[in-house]
Length: 461
Ligand SMILES: Nc1ncnc2c1ncn2[C@@H]1O[C@H](COP(=O)(O)OP(=O)(O)OP(=O)(O)O)[C@@H](O)[C@H]1O
Ligand SMILES: [Mg+2]
Image 1 (cartoon, rainbow, N blue to C red):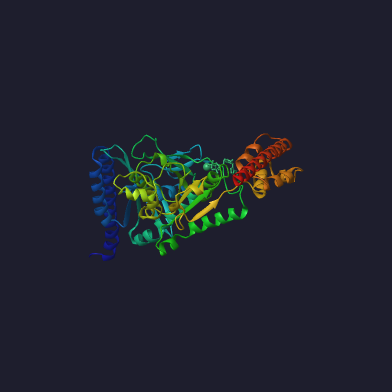
Image 2: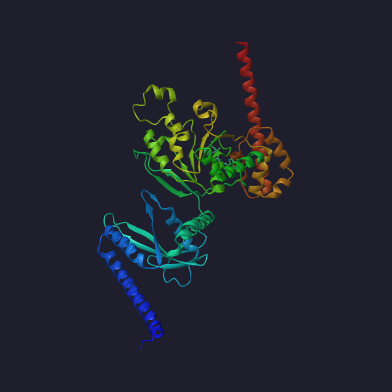
């Protein structure tokens, strides 16, 4: 007699173990094939094989696999970049091989996933496995990398709708925290065609705390930057490109470049320092601007004298036949189509001579904010004195006298900063600054007298 119960008990485990062992040996074979093919076959073939594997094996397994390539078309794949950062935060002691890294600017060592290693993550009780897979492109011999993310099939929607957005968000937070701001400039000036951006770390210590400027204006700028960063949806809603333009103007040494560095350090945005004298054509300008990354500050210093920009009229008279770099090319970028090819961009122009700028640049709406960086004020001096000499400098007996002189003359923060660097003894440094200011004021008074006399002479004539 057949014992159905017994047969059932026997049959089920047998068939499960049979399927499981077939599954396991299939998986092992596929792993073996994959490592062999990585060595022997072209990358394209490997990728078709992977697709076949995913299609065939995925359909019989209870797991879904996401393949996340490092690059997608010309640009990088943000999911890959985010995964790389995120996985560093969940590395477990059970991982066998890890990559260890530390650059001069990093405070601590970072551990990251190594090729073919697996990291397990848990999210809302779902177990997810990440694996980094590397292969060499046989054509250009570059390394191609992708992540494989495996998880139970039934959680596919949750992986897309909740888990991956969570990974992106966490990576962004980590990146913000650890980001070291970089400054990019264009390659060699003789590199016809614009060259490419080369970068180095922006090692500028300027922050809003160290900037000597009118405290209300300073706070206004900070609030303006905060508002700009917050308003992504607003810019989308009103159909405007998410960018903001600042024109910083004022005499030399009043802190225009320092303010740019303070803004970059505050927002943790990279700086693209665009030297107009290295730009030969509008096409050149477009190409270079298009390759700047999001969340960055594009800086054009000394816009008045960097290059002889033709004005719009003569450009148009030219019929635009040659593609020389023109003011209209630049303006086109600022408020035209190109500006919408990127998000969260700040554009800053600086000049010592606002009055010499082409009126097209000053027209309302072109640069959103005009900021006047002026000579040092008594309030500005307080920031400088505390920074360079410490709070107690403001209690010093000559402090008041210096403050009064500064309020009554034209002296740049750079000149004062230079005097404050002169020594370590507060007494001597403040004494030296006082003498310097007295001398300078005398010269300025003399100059004013001369000017008055000249004006008087002109009238008599
Ligand atoms: N407002 C300021 N607050 C603090 N330090 C300042 C300020 N302005 C100038 N300095 C000091 O002077 C140096 C030169 O200033 P900065 O390069 O920012 O001036 P600038 O306005 O960009 O001048 P230029 O018009 O010549 O480019 C800075 O490195 C800093 O040490
Ligand atoms: Mg400057």
